[in-house]
Image (cartoon, rainbow, N blue to C red; front, side, top):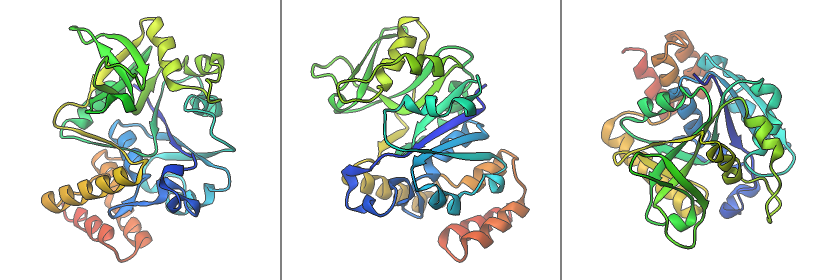
Amino acid sequence: MITKGIILAGGTGSRMSPLTKAINKQLLPIYDKPLIFYPLSILMLAKIKDILIIVNKGQMEQYKKLIPNGDNLGIKITYKEQDKPRGLPDAFILGEKFINNKNVAMILGDNFFYGQNLSSILLKSAKIKEGAGILLHKVQNPELFGVAKMNKNKKIITIKEKPKKFISNDAITGLYFFDKNVVNYAKKLKPSKRGELEIIDLLMMYKNKNKLRANFIGRGGAWLDTGSIDDYYKTIAFVQAVENRQGLKIACIEEIALLNEWINKEKIKRSIKFYGKCQYSDYLKKLLYK
């Protein structure tokens, strides 16, 4: 069972400029809570309690004002600064001491996941003992993503980054599960033409050893990349619609911690005081009477 997780919350957010000139993208709001809550909630749903958040140089204190160390959630959160983007696999090199020869999950800080069976899919994916695991979701425009082609037995035949010719519409989402070998593999990667380490190259190392597996979000689930302005506002509209219809919050990290029995209701009261008078606190108050 994977117990360690990494959230990549760095990057320039250039596709959302000028909004991201003054604040990191992952601190922008998705409806009534910051974007960082959403990937954090995914790791928590997978029962991962030891989490490293990688942020841009000079932005650590902004995150610590929001989520100091995870004590309010019954988890452990540490931060590490990245001086410049070097590609997704660089997270494992930066986080080598944190990973400490253990299996690890990594999620991109701007990815949004939702689905009725999502928790069970995450828990299944986090049970990986060796090899690597990816989460796939069908898309209409696979040429914009890394994709995986599967055979009839749901075994990965090939993976390709932004294929010009159609090979599959199963997109590789921004959530990955790796065994303890990932640090050594990442160190062996060479930068691509754009000067960064590529996640597809890392996945291919596992694929070539026949140790890459895939799970599917499924038709009832949603995966959104909030990296562009249009997708960002589509995600806000989605969250608003679902929460207002159901009366339940997506990515309420205190609620997940409570359901996981990592915290008690006393911690919920402290969170209410911390957030102050707001819609999010009103929802937390309801948890006290359940």
